[in-house]
Image 1 (cartoon, rainbow, N blue to C red):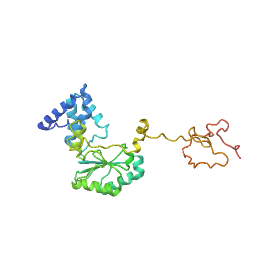
Image 2 (cartoon, rainbow, N blue to C red):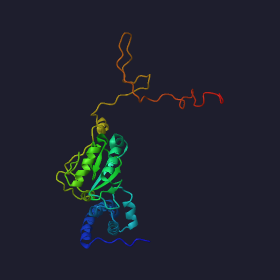
Image 3 (spheres, one colour):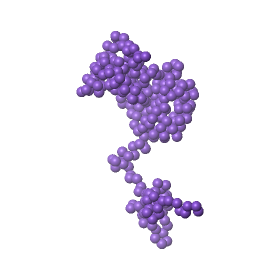
Image 4 (cartoon, rainbow, N blue to C red):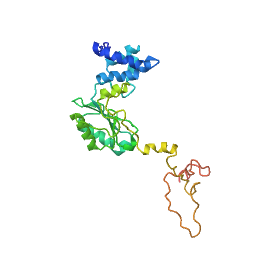
Length: 277
């Protein structure tokens, strides 16, 4: 059976959200461009994008609820069901996974008694595995409401979620102080971040991530050119003469390509013996 129309917000809530929405919409030349921040705005009210939130966005932007729902279901940062005060995301992308992310995620599922995208009974923590958050220098990484907790272990991650559930103050490794998920959603909607010191806080990348930028600026030495095995790179010194000692060499395992059966016409690919031999 078709669902009944979503209920509206209470009058005082709708009036407050309508004033905030008008401020957001005024930033854009086309009102429908404000949909993403407005979804964050309604998420800051209920902790997820409810049917009522979808109805509100559709009405203030003069869209259909189908158009709003299509966007809300496309982006993973919009929750479609009630979630916890703290979204705990464990990176399980390649580098974090092999350095312990998979083990951390499995341990937290058992420790909290929840599965992926599920919330603890006290409504404090929603656990999820997440894709790369560009913090590979600090792997394995756990994020809480999109703030970084770097270099985690199974035990440190367990202690982190225990502190969150107990209401104890926790401090991200980098970046701004932690706040609730609803507060995070309001900041993502484009409203001022009122946390003391949050704007000045830094969450910069690690040294390995910045090597390319330093090379581009001429602040780092260029990489060594490695020639194909048996050849000499343009910057490599000439071989030693008679009676001279050769410098210590460390051949790279990533030498330049060598001729193979597939690329060398004189050594075509195929069986080397007649059929039946």
